[in-house]
Amino acid sequence: MKKPIKQLAAAAFLTALSAAILSGCGKKEASADGGVTKIVVGTGNAYEPYCYLDDKGNLAGYEYEVLKAVDHLLPQYEFDYQTSDFANVLISLDAGKIDIAAHQYEWNKERDEKYLFGKEPYTTYVTYLAVADNRTDIQSLDDLQGLKVKSSTGSNSAFILESYNKEHPDNPIKIDYVNNSTDEETVTGILNGVWDATILTKRDTEKLNKIYGNGSNILKIAGEPVQSSSTYFVFAKNNTELQAAVDGAVKQLKESGELAKISVDIIGGDYTESE
Image 1 (cartoon, helix red, strand yellow):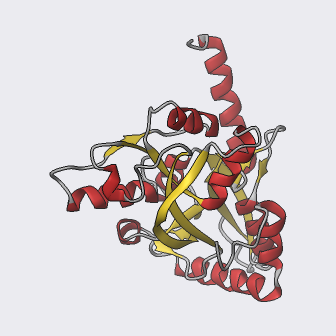
Image 2: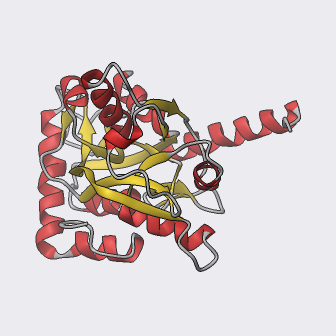
Image 3: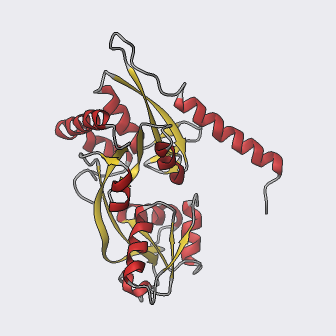
C-alpha cells in the first residue's frame, strides 16, 4: 500500500534534516595560522551494525566508531558526518560534497580507476553466496546461470556478478538491482523464491538468521567464497595528504589493539584480520 503524500514528505524532511545535522556546516578551510580543517565523511544510514541511524536518528555503528577514533588521533582535522543511502555515498564523493567515503568499501578495478583507496584495511570482507537453507542446487556462480540474484547498484557484489556475466554472455546470471531494501525484505525474498541467492559475508548471514530465524537457520552460505577482500576508506583521487593521515591513524589503532576492540564491541568479533 502506498504511503500518503504527507507521510512521504515528512519522511523526506526528516532524512534531509538528519543529514544536515550530521554534516554540520559543511567543509571549512584551515585557517591561515594552521587551524583545524573540517573534513566531511559520507557514510550510510541503513547497514547495521556498520553504519546506520539508531532509534533516535543518531549515526551509529562500526564505521562511525572507527572514524571517531581516527579523528581523535588527527588533531589537524575535525570530522563531520553526512549520511545517505549506499548508492549516493560515492556520488557525493564525485560531486566534492564529502572528503571520505566510508561504507565497508572493497577494492575493485572499476572503483580504483575513479577513486583513491586507503592503503590500510580496517575490516576483512569475505563474501559468499547466501541461499535459502533448503537449497542444495547452488554451490558456485556457475550454478546461478539463468537464475536471479539480488544485488545493489554500485556494490562490489554487483561488480562480481557483472564480471562473471561478461565472461559468460551466453547464459548470464540475472542480476536484480534492488537499492535501499531492508534485511527483512532480503530474507523474505530469498525464502519466497523472488531471488535464488544474494552475496553476503558469513557474519551478515548469521545476523539475519539470528534476527529472523526464530532459533533456526533459514539462510546458509553455499560453497567457497566468491571473493576474499578487505574494506578501505575511499578518497578523491588527488587527496593523498588526507589518505596518508587516515592510513597512519588506522595503523596506530591496529597496533594498539583499539581497532580489534571496536570490532568486537560493535560487530561481535575481531574481523580486522580474519573473517
